[in-house]
Image (cartoon, rainbow, N blue to C red; front, side, top):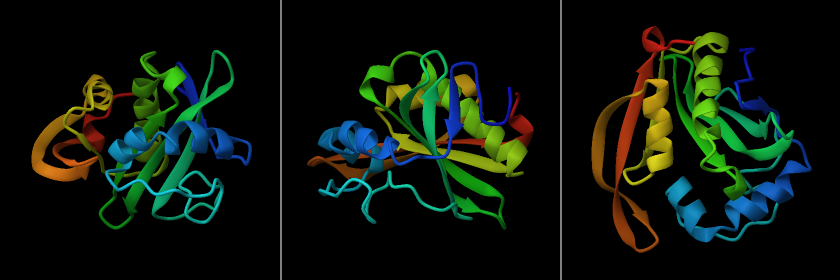
Length: 178
């Protein structure tokens, strides 16, 4: 595996033509966006300063990627390491796939590639996944890649009118297997 390529996907920098597709299929899905971000949905302009999908310069605290399905060369979603803490050598991991690309194993492959990037390329010591307790897709991907469930934050998230639990998964560099 090259640093940003798995068996099913590759990660690349976001480009302008990705923005309207991601905005339409990820942000404009109000329930999905609210669950994924665990923040209240607000209308935003595609590519505007408030857009999480806009093309921007790299940051020390955040590495944002577009996910491309290798078989078709098609934009499949987004992936990121966020909350990168260079001093403590840790980061959080996030993935969101377009509806047509869910359920095909791409999410697990994206998590593997992000782990390679975080542990091998950035030299991080710990990666963490925070997700809603009913997010079976992310939980399955985390467990398949080897993350350890570390706990539950009871009723941590307010999503679309209800309180939901959040689960934490962690992996240390020494536990990572390529």
